[in-house]
Image (cartoon, rainbow over all chains, first blue to last red; front, side):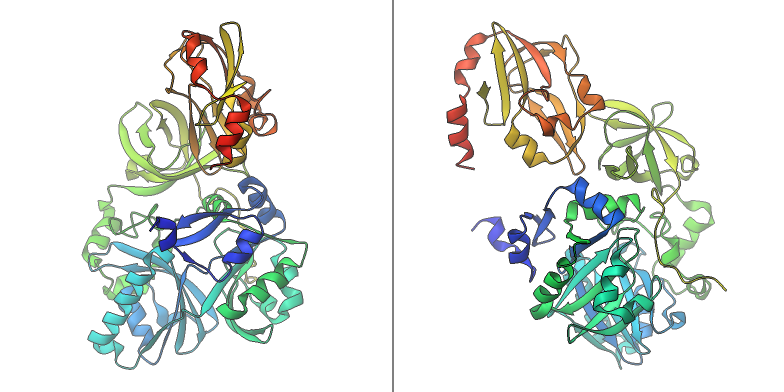
Length: 377
Length: 121
């Protein structure tokens, strides 16, 4: 049996191949890496609206009175203060504070959460949640349901709202990081106003057996084009968003991965975050490495694995993701360096194919985001 | 024009040859955004990685289809890497090589043989 026969397909496999999608193995699935071309798809998403099949990702519901306590035991977030109708970025932590996955957690109901997790981590994550519920008293009143019968689409770009307005106008009343349950093509859809591109947009959880209809309906609008995983990666990198397995894994804490926004101060005060002692020591000046954004100033693109050197040539870190930025016209990267070399403006070098090239630490995001934020006040 | 299984082409005049990547390779790579051409004067052995072609997604090595010395590199590609996609088997040439062993050409495929080979992929 060849490897490809072991791969799973999303419910939209036939649609991807019919559209000329180049299918590659990703996290155990056959996924489209591109249709027309990564560059064109990237630029289309920044200007119009791109449609992504992300049905390989894991989806689950966690509900009941103890659901908040379960989430707080496993993550650094304060879910008690997450309002109904809001969404939060979070991290699944190991006992020692290492990062096991990153999650989007929505609260469409007062006692009901909806989780979206990485495809490559979903079996592990769901085992951890189920074990915890079965063995901890916080899990007594909690129901956990893995949603294997739902697909997930992301519609992203400055014109995503114009497309959604015709299909589900109520969803367009949401602001960035809002979520809710909506009727769409006669089905129940869990929709959030968020995504992984830095653009305004929506993520739509939809019954797998009807997602072909939704896919076709969305693509019938000439503003919408299908976008593969290649552009998804370059878009998220420009937005400065980390990718599990690259900018974080079990060997990194949230402080090292520069993901402090996934932690609530109240949890630090309470002192009940997994790995709290290590985390506190790092936050009190004990960090030895931290994630930074890099601009490549000359030479070839820096890719994952490229060494990061100080200005005088000493090896100080490693690139975890890098791409020639289609929006900016120069190469960008993320990687880890000691805090003493992490200030914006620090001159560094990146080593590619045995030669070193000038780079500098820059601020995140690389490309300004286009979120539809709730007006202040 | 002659071809390799790694999708490089060679266009020979006397004992000098332009080399580049084939239309098939350019299409498979997608949009080329960076090309690292070899230094003039570099000595290549057949099969050496002598250039790198990068798309948004990945960096791909280009292997020397013949042995010899680099006598010219297509430095225009640094300002216009997309030439590799537009005219891979003409203006998208990567280097000009002075052949050290003309007999190596005999092992390369002609266009008909290369197209037969592509049909098996």
